[in-house]
Image (cartoon, rainbow, N blue to C red; front, side):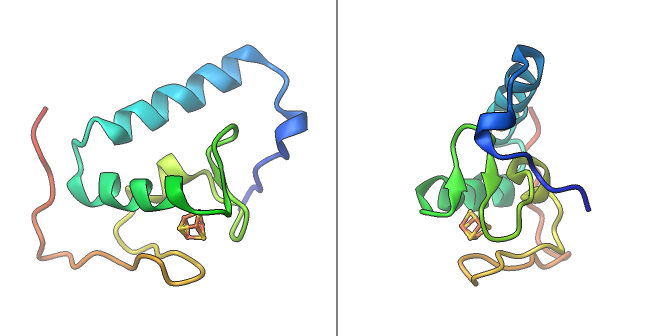
Length: 90
Ligand code: SF4
């Protein structure tokens, strides 16, 4: 898995805008479980608001939170039951 670059290495505007857009997609709430997970991350001391990455697993969180089988490395949120219907139509 590719690790997220440290904040000081994020230099190009295109990357920053893409990450902002992906974060906004999650926060619109099309996937309820993803929005709930992401809100927990946004309050977490390990989360980088600039690069949108977790300081524990180094994952890009707007991508990780939409994968149902993933979980927080320190146990703040877990995998989502496949039986749950969390998709909210746009
Ligand atoms: S995955 Fe867990 S440790 Fe990482 S930022 Fe989110 S809540 Fe914090």
